[in-house]
Image (cartoon, rainbow, N blue to C red; front, side):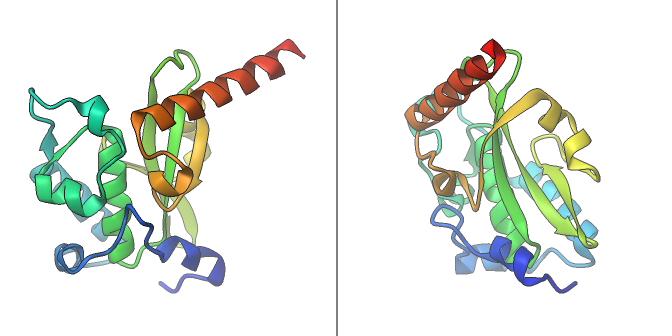
Length: 184
Protein backbone atom coordinates (compact mmCIF):
# COMPACT_ATOMS: atom_id res chain seq x y z
CA UNK A 1 0.00 0.00 0.00
CA UNK A 2 1.27 3.48 -0.83
CA UNK A 3 1.74 5.81 2.09
CA UNK A 4 0.73 9.45 1.67
CA UNK A 5 3.27 12.20 2.32
CA UNK A 6 1.86 12.46 5.85
CA UNK A 7 2.69 8.81 6.57
CA UNK A 8 6.04 8.82 4.73
CA UNK A 9 7.64 10.67 7.66
CA UNK A 10 7.15 7.47 9.65
CA UNK A 11 9.18 5.43 7.14
CA UNK A 12 12.32 7.39 7.98
CA UNK A 13 14.98 5.92 10.19
CA UNK A 14 15.97 7.60 13.42
CA UNK A 15 19.43 7.66 14.98
CA UNK A 16 18.47 4.76 17.27
CA UNK A 17 16.44 2.99 14.60
CA UNK A 18 18.89 3.02 11.68
CA UNK A 19 18.05 0.49 9.01
CA UNK A 20 21.38 -1.27 8.54
CA UNK A 21 22.10 -3.92 5.93
CA UNK A 22 21.69 -6.57 8.67
CA UNK A 23 18.26 -5.20 9.55
CA UNK A 24 17.30 -5.08 5.86
CA UNK A 25 18.31 -8.76 5.56
CA UNK A 26 16.06 -9.67 8.51
CA UNK A 27 13.16 -7.60 7.11
CA UNK A 28 13.37 -9.35 3.72
CA UNK A 29 12.11 -12.48 5.49
CA UNK A 30 8.80 -10.75 6.34
CA UNK A 31 6.52 -11.32 3.37
CA UNK A 32 2.86 -11.00 2.56
CA UNK A 33 0.52 -8.12 3.30
CA UNK A 34 1.11 -5.62 6.11
CA UNK A 35 -0.78 -7.70 8.68
CA UNK A 36 1.30 -10.76 7.83
CA UNK A 37 4.49 -8.71 8.07
CA UNK A 38 3.53 -7.33 11.51
CA UNK A 39 2.74 -10.85 12.70
CA UNK A 40 6.09 -12.08 11.36
CA UNK A 41 7.92 -9.25 13.13
CA UNK A 42 6.20 -10.12 16.42
CA UNK A 43 7.19 -13.77 15.99
CA UNK A 44 10.77 -12.92 15.00
CA UNK A 45 11.27 -10.72 18.06
CA UNK A 46 9.74 -13.36 20.33
CA UNK A 47 12.02 -16.06 18.91
CA UNK A 48 15.28 -14.10 18.62
CA UNK A 49 15.33 -11.50 21.39
CA UNK A 50 15.49 -12.91 24.91
CA UNK A 51 15.14 -11.32 28.36
CA UNK A 52 18.21 -9.55 29.71
CA UNK A 53 20.75 -11.81 31.41
CA UNK A 54 20.23 -11.95 35.19
CA UNK A 55 23.61 -10.31 35.84
CA UNK A 56 22.92 -7.36 33.51
CA UNK A 57 22.24 -3.94 35.06
CA UNK A 58 19.33 -2.97 32.81
CA UNK A 59 18.88 0.51 34.33
CA UNK A 60 22.49 1.36 33.41
CA UNK A 61 21.95 0.59 29.71
CA UNK A 62 18.25 1.56 29.44
CA UNK A 63 17.64 3.46 26.16
CA UNK A 64 21.36 3.60 25.33
CA UNK A 65 21.52 0.90 22.63
CA UNK A 66 20.50 1.18 19.00
CA UNK A 67 18.12 -1.32 17.40
CA UNK A 68 21.08 -2.88 15.63
CA UNK A 69 22.98 -3.32 18.92
CA UNK A 70 19.93 -4.80 20.69
CA UNK A 71 19.51 -7.32 17.84
CA UNK A 72 23.23 -8.13 17.86
CA UNK A 73 23.17 -8.65 21.65
CA UNK A 74 20.07 -10.86 21.29
CA UNK A 75 18.42 -9.62 24.50
CA UNK A 76 16.19 -6.77 25.67
CA UNK A 77 15.74 -4.70 28.82
CA UNK A 78 11.94 -4.63 28.44
CA UNK A 79 9.25 -2.96 26.39
CA UNK A 80 11.52 -0.06 25.45
CA UNK A 81 14.01 -2.23 23.56
CA UNK A 82 11.26 -4.37 22.04
CA UNK A 83 9.45 -1.28 20.71
CA UNK A 84 12.69 0.10 19.24
CA UNK A 85 13.34 -3.19 17.43
CA UNK A 86 9.73 -3.37 16.26
CA UNK A 87 9.62 0.15 14.76
CA UNK A 88 12.93 -0.45 13.00
CA UNK A 89 11.91 -3.79 11.48
CA UNK A 90 8.46 -2.46 10.51
CA UNK A 91 9.94 0.54 8.70
CA UNK A 92 12.50 -1.74 7.03
CA UNK A 93 9.43 -3.70 5.82
CA UNK A 94 7.98 -0.47 4.35
CA UNK A 95 5.31 -0.03 7.03
CA UNK A 96 5.03 3.55 8.41
CA UNK A 97 5.56 3.23 12.17
CA UNK A 98 5.55 5.61 15.16
CA UNK A 99 7.43 4.94 18.41
CA UNK A 100 5.32 5.87 21.48
CA UNK A 101 6.51 6.12 25.08
CA UNK A 102 4.07 6.38 27.98
CA UNK A 103 4.05 6.78 31.76
CA UNK A 104 1.62 4.86 33.95
CA UNK A 105 -1.34 7.03 35.09
CA UNK A 106 -1.99 5.10 38.31
CA UNK A 107 1.57 4.46 39.48
CA UNK A 108 3.80 6.91 37.60
CA UNK A 109 6.90 6.31 39.73
CA UNK A 110 9.31 4.69 37.26
CA UNK A 111 6.54 2.78 35.49
CA UNK A 112 5.42 3.09 31.92
CA UNK A 113 5.18 1.25 28.65
CA UNK A 114 6.46 1.62 25.08
CA UNK A 115 4.52 0.64 21.97
CA UNK A 116 4.25 1.53 18.30
CA UNK A 117 1.56 2.58 15.89
CA UNK A 118 1.61 1.10 12.40
CA UNK A 119 -0.15 2.45 9.33
CA UNK A 120 -2.03 -0.49 7.82
CA UNK A 121 -5.04 -0.48 5.48
CA UNK A 122 -5.27 3.32 5.53
CA UNK A 123 -5.43 3.64 9.32
CA UNK A 124 -3.16 3.77 12.35
CA UNK A 125 -3.22 0.73 14.62
CA UNK A 126 -1.45 0.21 17.92
CA UNK A 127 1.16 -2.56 17.86
CA UNK A 128 2.36 -3.76 21.26
CA UNK A 129 5.24 -6.10 20.42
CA UNK A 130 5.78 -6.89 24.12
CA UNK A 131 2.30 -8.42 24.24
CA UNK A 132 2.24 -9.55 20.58
CA UNK A 133 -0.96 -7.54 20.17
CA UNK A 134 -2.42 -5.37 17.44
CA UNK A 135 -5.26 -2.97 18.32
CA UNK A 136 -7.46 -1.66 15.51
CA UNK A 137 -8.62 1.33 17.58
CA UNK A 138 -5.47 2.67 19.31
CA UNK A 139 -7.21 5.14 21.62
CA UNK A 140 -9.42 2.34 22.96
CA UNK A 141 -6.40 0.19 23.85
CA UNK A 142 -5.31 -0.36 27.43
CA UNK A 143 -2.07 1.46 26.59
CA UNK A 144 -3.81 4.79 25.95
CA UNK A 145 -6.21 4.29 28.83
CA UNK A 146 -3.43 3.45 31.32
CA UNK A 147 -0.62 5.81 30.22
CA UNK A 148 0.12 9.49 29.74
CA UNK A 149 2.15 9.97 26.56
CA UNK A 150 5.76 11.04 27.16
CA UNK A 151 6.49 11.30 23.47
CA UNK A 152 5.86 10.14 19.92
CA UNK A 153 8.73 9.97 17.46
CA UNK A 154 10.93 7.82 15.28
CA UNK A 155 12.47 6.15 18.34
CA UNK A 156 13.23 6.96 21.98
CA UNK A 157 16.27 9.08 21.11
CA UNK A 158 14.04 11.15 18.80
CA UNK A 159 11.62 11.59 21.73
CA UNK A 160 14.56 12.79 23.88
CA UNK A 161 15.05 9.66 25.98
CA UNK A 162 18.61 8.33 25.79
CA UNK A 163 18.95 6.98 29.33
CA UNK A 164 16.95 6.04 32.42
CA UNK A 165 17.76 9.49 33.82
CA UNK A 166 16.14 11.10 30.76
CA UNK A 167 13.06 8.88 31.20
CA UNK A 168 12.75 9.92 34.86
CA UNK A 169 13.09 13.62 33.95
CA UNK A 170 10.43 13.34 31.23
CA UNK A 171 8.09 11.43 33.53
CA UNK A 172 8.58 14.00 36.31
CA UNK A 173 7.53 16.77 33.91
CA UNK A 174 4.39 14.85 32.96
CA UNK A 175 3.56 14.18 36.64
CA UNK A 176 3.97 17.90 37.49
CA UNK A 177 1.73 18.89 34.56
CA UNK A 178 -0.92 16.40 35.62
CA UNK A 179 -0.85 17.73 39.21
CA UNK A 180 -1.30 21.31 37.93
CA UNK A 181 -4.27 20.23 35.83
CA UNK A 182 -5.82 18.28 38.72
CA UNK A 183 -5.57 21.36 40.99
CA UNK A 184 -7.59 23.51 38.59
